Length: 213
Ligand code: E4P
Image (cartoon, rainbow, N blue to C red; front, side, top):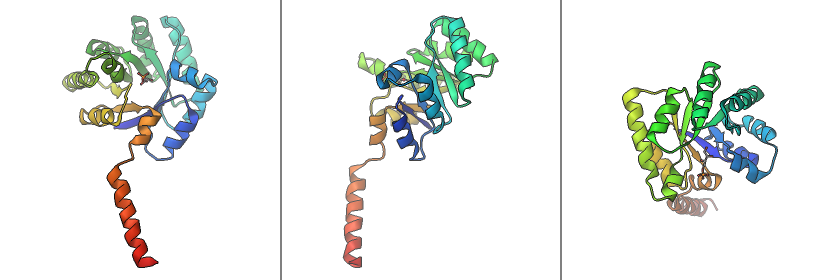
């Protein structure tokens, strides 16, 4: 399973990539706005740390998406063009597929949308599970349903579990065989920790000091 960081903060990318476990980054317009930094510079800085950086188009019509996406793809080979799940987006995906430009289809909330994006040639699809949970639905059930369909038809499109909220989401996504999980910084920082690891290490060190001091 590939692990991505869900952020537009370059310092966070630098820190987590130093652990040797980071495969990519997903940005979106809201995350970029939160940081208040230049979009192109942010994305290019991240490309120095990871081989996949999703950069979202902000045009809402196909021609505009194509224009922006082609420009992003020229900035750096590590950029993956993020396209919203709309009919205009589907047309743009088909174009990018022909041009061999990697894409990530964002804002997927149903199996039908997932199938359409895969058929249009998306490299990655991003079902948002946390936002479904937020409104009382079962986000992980959507991943289960998509992975079932993927098994039946062998779609090459990778399933990226997005809008994760806690470590259990990452574990459940892995158990279902999802290809990628994108994780917010504060959740990523929780992943290496376990109370028994801390207690065990403290005891090892205490015992070691007894025989060495
Ligand atoms: C994915 O690419 C999105 O950036 C992200 O996961 C959205 O998550 P949110 O629902 O926490 O905003």
